[in-house]
Length: 339
Image (cartoon, rainbow, N blue to C red):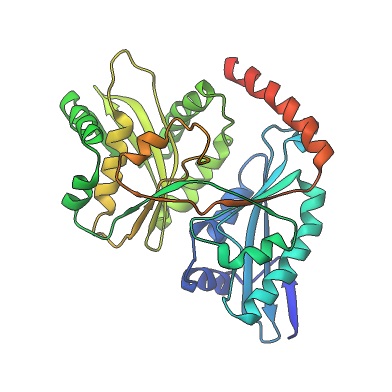
């Protein structure tokens, strides 16, 4: 089989390949690559394998993420592959995927400390692809909510305590509004950034959210929301949308003197909007490792989704540099939480 690896696949073919693939997802699309290109401290890597007739056999979108800029950035650089690579699930596709991943390895070693492959499906059937290249499997939980049913059925499956929170938010006058004006993304970012700062977790640069709003919202591939209380924005959430899936992405809320249940209200609003509306699944975006405490797992669990453990694959490209980075990054997180 004569094949060629390219870093500039035909955009139309690429889009069609991802859309028609059974596991096609937004993270492997040209649109997401464009978002990465416009994000500070992000560098997308796009690769594809085509055969002699220019048919795409494999697509891979990865992104180099640096938690900090400048010279220190190389000590925080890691690669993330979300729900990829996508390849024809036959002998040709699997063989082409192996060739592509071997090629990718040469690039990854020069650009990042490690690569993490995240998925929302069971990848055990393709484990040989990753294990053969030295990737290690790590368990990771997630919750998936079936949207292909009436709103009333989704409501009944939500835990009583979570329904109570949703109703309390309504009684307190919490209003959910979709963000339509780009100027509001600054306020959106402030709310989310404040939440991430309180839990000492790094957040993507403002340019990431600005790019998502400008490039994805107009294509109905993302929605930004505010939760408002007495006219003030007290909560924020963004979701990605592609084919039959809604992906919970980033969220935040302001600390308040009284519980306003804005996160419950935001999630329920999004579930209602997706119910029986062409969407089949709401992906809650992860629920941590099975044997480790994860604060928001219980919050997500009580929305009645199916608990899955599709896991992740990880490969360290520079063990010594990673150890140095982990010590330094631990200090960075403490500093960033109080700045």
